[in-house]
Image (tube, rainbow, N blue to C red; front, side, top):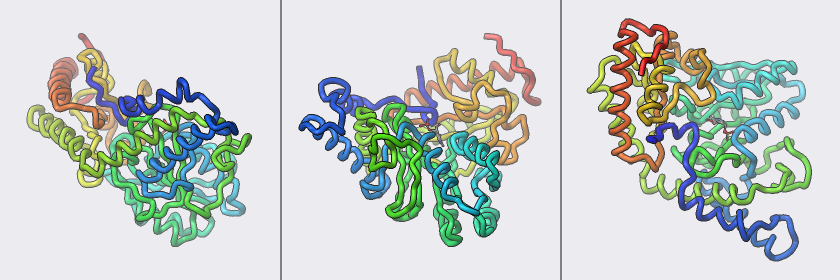
Amino acid sequence: MIYLDSNATTQVHPEVLEAMLPYLTDQCYNPSSGYRAGKKVKEAIEKARVQMAQLINAEPDEIYFTGCGTESNNAVLLSLAKMAGENKRIVTSAIEHSAILRVCEELERECFLVERVGVDSEGRLDLDAWKAAVSKGDVCMATLMWANNETGVIQPIAEAYKAANDAGVPFHTDAIQAVGKAHVDVKEVPVDFLSISGHKFHAPKGVGALYIRQGVGFEPLLRGGGQEKGKRSGTENVASIIGMGTAAELMRSRLEMDCHDCVGALRDHLEHRLLTELDGVQINGSMEHRTKNTSHLSFEGCEAAGLLILLDEYGVACSAGSACMTGKQKPSHVQKAMGFDDARAKSSLRISFSILTTKDETDKAVEAIKKAVGKLRSVQGTGGVGPVVVYT
Ligand SMILES: Cc1ncc(COP(=O)(O)O)c(C=O)c1O
């Protein structure tokens, strides 16, 4: 299968797996155990913490391992809500992942007021509206994703952070689609909290991290044995943490080697071929500000749901909108926020690459997409999106 859905998840890199294996077998000890073998496992976790910190230019003791990106997001928002006092306003964007949206909805039911700032047609935050929202005086937190999971569009994080910080508002960023793919540096943009997920950059699923800037208050979500300096109790997922550290180091070296330019070159090659070899193709989102691994494209006259079925049959895996939206008939909230009409929103595919994608796979995927689009247009016509009827 040709896998072009790396924003949904990535393959565990062979080097990552190799680093993990001892901790699933003979190095199975609990890092909290007092004997030497346990202490060695603890040391390995601390090395992973350094590796994770280096990828985002943090200090190691600002990194806390969690169970996933969703947990990191939930932990921050619920902590800030708990410490909110009289300030009940939350400022976020209209294009966040469900791991932020659903928490905000829950907080709304608990008497918080949530302001969802919009984006322009390129999927970038309306900064003026953001600045006005964070300056209202009763804001307890601001949370904005670094890069969008559907479009790959990178948000004006530095400016959004500054506005929040000037107003004295704690700032969190869901950087799950940016870390390992784009330049993320917490000394350049000194956010208070930043969420990370391992499986988006070749570590296993079920491990995440939370960056908490030194000195910033935090109320733990999980309490118990006091692991992670009391900020996230629970016996550590040792092998996955080691895997995430190794993956972080791998991604740092690839970013330094400009390897993501190679990923970007494949993405650009795919887009160039589709735009020149097919009619009615549109690239969605900012061309200037987007992660190099993501392409979000609309195919006039084709329902994405039908395209996905055909592509699956031709051996290509990609997605419509985000993985979490798959199977739901509604156009994604991200495309709605960008002002797309239903036809354009429902005819959009997300194609996302990784450092393991090859040129040969990219070319084969182009041929499969051309075939699928041709087939759908022959049954649906190009005048608009009709009912999804796929004859194979
Ligand atoms: C932007 C964003 N936030 C949060 C998440 C959730 O991360 P995890 O799957 O590690 O819980 C994802 C994963 O799809 C994501 O893309």
